[in-house]
Length: 390
Image (tube, rainbow, N blue to C red; front, side):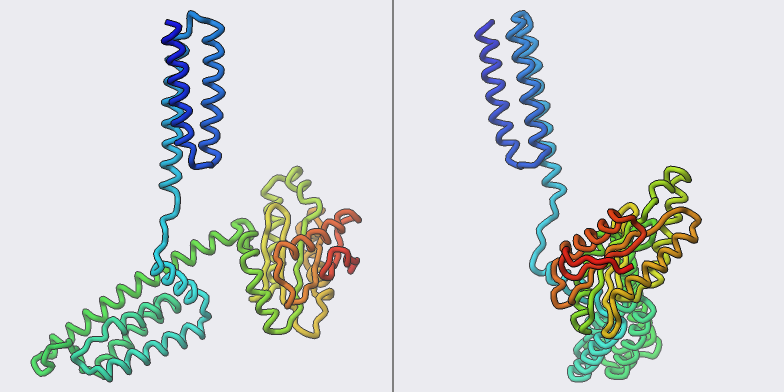
């Protein structure tokens, strides 16, 4: 009996350990947790079996069952990792994604120029190739590009323009490789109508996809309560504003804001009152921002703004004016909430370290907190260049 028990302990535990080592090749915390749990439980079971010899058989059975249970858990975790891992992207897919992102960054004017240039190139190629060579795919590409970049109405307009220009070049209702003299008027009308209807359906599907993607991007980058940018979107867009500042030769201004006394509003009046204060503050701040400026809620009662200040305008005055406007908006809520603001004036040419800039503004804001709150501090490039501006 003892030899059998020791064999079960030695064999079962050894096999379990070997299998566990193989199963734990994915060094994530899931599998490490399973492994530690199994080792601790089996150690306790074997210790109990040695203390109570009459229960060794039961202990060996429980130990073996535990091994199979834990191994199954590790295999399940490994399968989950495999399923949840993003599939590899081919070079073609990566190129397509880069082109999609490029078209999504186009302004309305830029998109219109690109679509019109594509239409001109397609019509010219259609005129050169003649009616026997179909360039339907070229016209469809123009229609889809218009729907993707300029939405459904412009896409439908380009469908109609494609049909009209194609008919002018090749003949009304023309079909490649078909003798145009043998087409009746009704057939020509049918061909043109079906071609237009098919293109319009594709345009509507593409426009719907673009609207859906834009909606998901908005939800992923927007704070639901205040309708401002969230922290992740703010950090990803800082470089865009910095590039605008470098092109214009502007000075950059980064503001870090924290609401004083906000927690007391939640504790005394409820979270609905606190949410109202946050929305009022965010609405006033966004109303003072220009289209290229950024304003975000980082979390709780902390906000950030990033502005490119034009030449001839003092960044200190902009920060002081905004602080005064925001303080007035907070007073209008009827709650004893004020704003502590830290500001950093940055040369656009040196604005490359996002986290350093945010940390510098945060330090300036904390300096306000340590010296009475409800004020503004402005830092110039380095944390030791902090001074009181209001």
